[in-house]
Image (cartoon, rainbow, N blue to C red; front, side, top):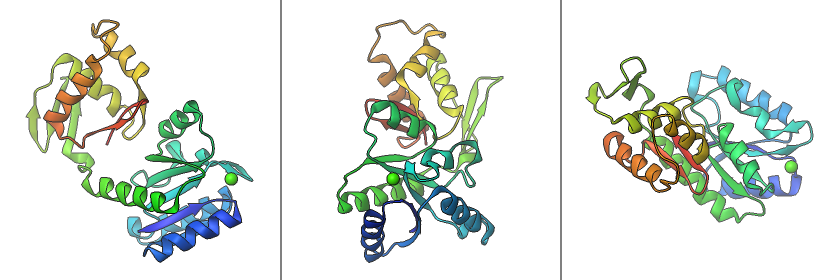
Length: 221
Ligand code: CA
């Protein structure tokens, strides 16, 4: 895999880059946000989507800003996967990272082999993802087509899908989703209801369609 490592700690960066390269990955290493942006822009300019890094390993505390500034609406290629590497272990920081569009999160200090395993998992997941065009939502008709086939959804399933589809890949917290479902009549205190609706929707759209972020919420793959 082509990896872009954004890490300002020279000792850690060196160790991570060497380990990943020895596992067969190609690693580009940026020490700050400016270098990371340059590498991403150069990747986009290269041979369309085939030139740039496939996965960005992103430290958050960088000398010229917050790593999350690389994500969001200005992210150069939305299909690129991002794994955040950081010592910030507060739940709200994790949520912030996932909401900004990160695909995974690894807390420092981490084991280099665990990092490698997570990278393989992200790679497998991104290969398995349904092509975005496969899923078509019609908000007016409140109907959905998967590979051209109409899929019939209940009101709750539609409401959940509509929330997650608001920004594909973004983490939506349980609170956000339940707030929306409440407007469709989902009662308070039905704590396991969301899981039930998610599992029904997975049966209809495919088990990989919805990603669970344990203890945090869900996103649309
Ligand atoms: Ca740092």
